[in-house]
Image (cartoon, rainbow, N blue to C red; front, side, top):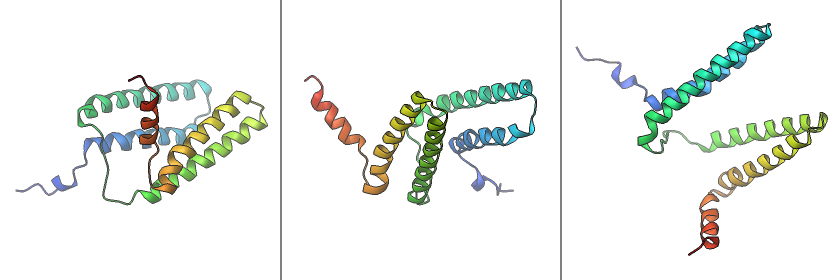
Length: 144
């Protein structure tokens, strides 16, 4: 008898990616339910350990494959959505840094936001990546 479920087989790289996205999200959603600080500390430590183990396992397993690309859908709306989420988080962090007068955090958020706008903004709005231009610029500065 032929196995009908073989076409539904998910690549291992997708499984790692799903775990590394969904597991911390589930832990974060579970944290408000736990009231005791000691239990919360153990949940955070164990979930960080599990995430670290799966990250190293994914690195060891997928390193020889090179870059893994996921196709079959238009990535432009996803990129725009993620860019919007990153800017919303940056605005929230800026607000907290100003409100609580954490000037180092303010400086780091400004630098990070500028880099996000530079790298991702070129891809999103110009349709090109600025990294090759930076590499060409670096090669002109390097020794012959």
